[in-house]
Image (cartoon, rainbow, N blue to C red; front, side, top):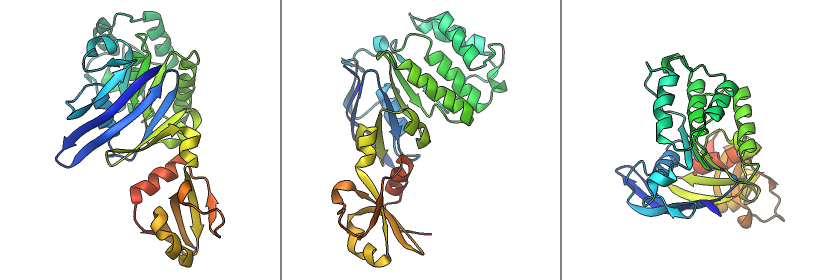
Length: 284
């Protein structure tokens, strides 16, 4: 079953637009949503959650139209945003007492468990929390009402490496039984290499690719060679960098001739994202 089915989302702003954004997330898997800042990740997530008025397209959650069944479906969705500030003078307990009234399946024991796991003190005020602890608190709320789909925007932002690793372990624990699905955006691509099953890559408001993680990476090659070789292959490259040794560039695997003299290797998720962001010569 599809946990999330995004179909042809359009949203136009004066200086930016989402264009035909479509992808699907199967139930029981983790999808990393990547792209540089401003590529459209947050706009897409807010569109999925019906937090802004889209110009076109549809979103289905567990086979039901989000626009038509929003109130009911949001009982099954947990969401957290890395940049959201709560009322800074309020204590965590006050905010929690208000939040849990909106969810029929709020579980106090699960919530208490996440408070312990994340080392959160309910008596502290939001203003007393670090940015990383605010993220953990958002996650504690998102995970405590029986959500089957987690939609998280930059959930690891502000977390130290140990806390990030703990969070990625938690994601893996959550999907073990195949009931919970996770979509999370991040610019920390090493996190996705540890835990994501699928990758969806957005660039300038358009989906470049959405595929199983290994399939996504294997669709590209990082090639390097001399300046003379660059002249031959330049048109096939997505982008490249010129250096004192020649050049290094990103190319689609289908456009690469393995019999050529160019050196080739598998790129990382970060390298794919960086080269798409460049899309022009970069001299270093």
